[in-house]
Amino acid sequence: MKKLMIILGIACISASAIAQPAVRIGNMEIIVRKQGQDTTMQVNVLEDPCPPCPPSENETGSRARSNTYKYHYKSSFGGLGFILPDIGSNNYTTLGGSSINLDIGSMHRYQRTRWFALVGTLQYSYYNYKLHDAAEDEDFKREALRSDYSNAEINKQVFRSHNAGIGAFTRFYSGQPRRHSNDGVFIDIGIQGDWAFSKYYKLKTHKGSKEKIRDDYAFNSFAASYVVRVGMTRWFSVYARYRFTDAFNSKALPLDLPPFTFGVLLL
Image (tube, rainbow, N blue to C red; front, side):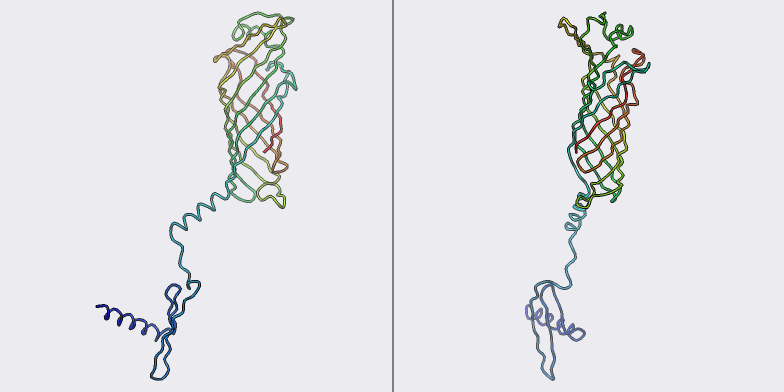
């Protein structure tokens, strides 16, 4: 049986040699030459197989996943913003410079083309509104404070909230520095949602007494904002945020908190 297989193999090689002088199997090359009545066979071992073997399904899938992940970038960021005081009739008066916003979170960027990307953020946001006249408002006294203080007694009054936020943005590039691919001058346009897991109004008198009020009816837990960011380099951007929902329940309190925040973001 073994002799029969050997004979058949030699016959196949010989038949192939008639049409093609060299036969290659993997990295082994068999050359058959016929000179007159004599036939010689030469076997060479090549360094690289020719033609090259096609990639397996696992290798192809791994390469595809690698290319897709190549355009996903993850980074952390931190920001400091200042709430724009609004002394209009629709909002409580806040003190500029003392009313701030802090952001800390992670950013995911999915680069779709050289000039366009999708950006998602997951963050913690802190808002501190230093109020001036809330305790003097009759509706605020009745619905939230439930106490009566004169302006001369009050030393400090603030509204604070700790929030978990998520945002979605579209990013457009207007230019790219030479050494930083996919990181250049850009503008982000998107929306952000915040859930206040801790929110309260705090009042401190000149005598040292303190009062902290948490009211789930008067103080809304959810907020949504439009956000625009302009990045000058890959590390630095400025942002403007406009909250288009009410911070206070309009059914309980007729006035609200200022909606505009401007700040700086370090990426």
